[in-house]
Length: 215
Image (cartoon, rainbow, N blue to C red):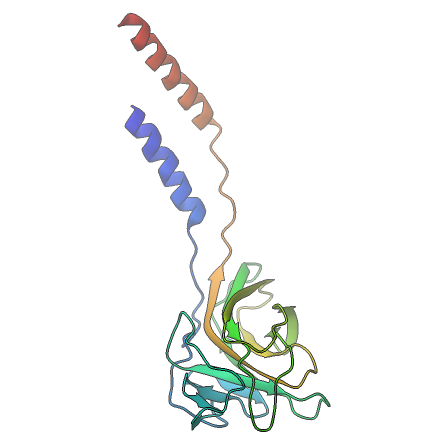
């Protein structure tokens, strides 16, 4: 009987933790190095985002970062986006996700780093702003130039079955940030505990007590 209790509670925990992802294409941002190019599944929104890797910036082989680049936990290539301090140059990219559920809450996650760019110098503090149909829905932390990657996320509720999900730099600081490991996951609702479960646990506890007393 004790095993049944553990199995029941475990099953409830499993149901409560179940999540599923909408069909986000190439969240790893895998692709060929490219200046003014984004990986398959993604579309340039503004400017000329780049597909880079640890030994390349702006799609060119060489050390063009302001600091030493490192790999994200996702590894491989990532996308670099820039923004100037005058608002004349802004880069963004996006993709259209078509299998969302209206009214469903989602978590949009990513990793970001601020390696900057060495020439011309883009070394300001900045962060990633997430976009839904071109409108900001949340911003990660502002990061100074450095070699570290940071995990970030925002939540949103789908108002249609199809939305454009994209990214841009959050402020007008002259900067060049990297993004990788993009994920889109449903936020699971809390599963209520059946009213009969506490009674079942109490009853079994009583039976165990009686058995011990009899022994």
